Amino acid sequence: MSIDFLHSESTGIKICGLIDEEMVDVAVGSGAGAIGFVFVEDSPRYIERTVADTLMLQLPDEVTGVAVVQNATSLDSFSTWNGLLQLCGNEDERTVATAPRPVIKAVQWDPEEVLRWDGCENVRAILVDGSRGGLGVSFDVTALAKIIPTLQTPIIIAGGLTSQNVQEVIRIAQPAAVDVSSGIESRLGIKDPKLICEFINNVVALG
Image (tube, rainbow, N blue to C red; front, side, top):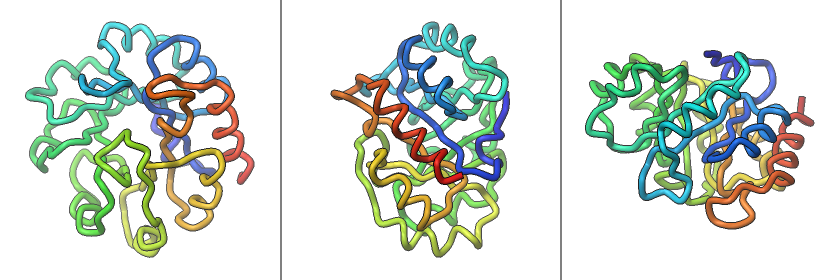
């Protein structure tokens, strides 16, 4: 497992909500540094663990697999997950600290929530979204940009990102990484290979 997408000189790219071999190939081949698999059952991007485990075998060593989980009653089954856990519910500090894998803590934009998780045990990054996740809701990143230089934990920006707006968001906030799901879909839950490539190319173009 690699988490280099959070620590490279250029902006890291996480493509989330993939459910099939073709789209994983497209994302990895285009330069994604992380692939997210959604284990939230009411999500249109939900994937069975057995299917995700098979898709994980496609990932080269330099690409991180991320298990997206929300308010799970237990995280014990992820002790065998060869990647990061993205916890996007109301998990408390103890749950995060004792999670069996390193954590990306996802929060809806609120400066107090960002500060709450900054530097917390077992948190490798804080993902800041415009919603509780997966709804494509953007937020004004200007305020977040002001506090990012004061934080010790890498920031991933998500929520309403598309190939049209991602460069501006990166210029304003300079996050460690960006995350996209609905912004690369032709319809709800269905990824579009052209949109995946356009999004990644526009991030990579910034250097």
